[in-house]
Length: 371
Image (cartoon, rainbow, N blue to C red):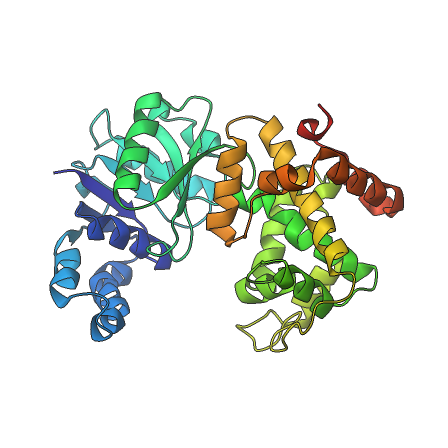
């Protein structure tokens, strides 16, 4: 039987373990914190109990999921694994040390995977005896529900490792999208303009309600500020600052003062009871709603185009990732196909001409738009 190992039993790690166990795989699971190990199965049982009471999950199926998961003391007990996935703290030395420990006990062809959302997979592979078997498997929260998994290959990742990770994760019901080992991967990278252009318009005097109402009228389940309020302004700021630093402060990843002020105020969104917009609703779309939508979508297209130019993914992969990862009604290349290159370029040119000094260069068109 194929065995999956999961290291890190917080919300994400436990969700990943549940995902594979529900698909019939045997699981070895561990955490550096004894209490997390001791309570893991009880937490999973408690999390799934409401589904049993609602008739959405049979008690026998819940029992089977729990029976497939064996909690062990640490990586040394994970030698039988075919695929080991870490979901530990986002600190490079911790992950590198963990992979070195796993490499010492697993079979030569076992795959090592990181669930990192922000760190370089290539950097994690440094120092490993077999770096070709290390890759990224980035799940989205909540892991059992979200269909998307980003499959991240560093330059030395082997085809056999990628194939095994893909097959096992697709067998667990996920849509696996290859993506490059670049800052933000696909979703976190290409989502920046969704928030950034909204914050730029806020800086210009537009209201959060107008912007969100326009985007929702265009089919987006949540507008940019509603999505920030859902995730948390502090989380959004951390992701934006991380990507801005990784991309050497390029103006496409500018960190807007309005976002910093929001975090400083403590009004972080739903978790604190007030955010950019929450608890208010957007209301009716403004008369110029289409212009708001076209601006944000042009920036989304452009960012996707720059990622495409860096290699390691496809137009279809980017579209699928953004639709599954953010529930967008259409992907950026679907937008481009519907609107045409000339219209998108014209919007970018208009934005570039009107951009303030701190955004100079933000709207430079990607190669896919100018070929």
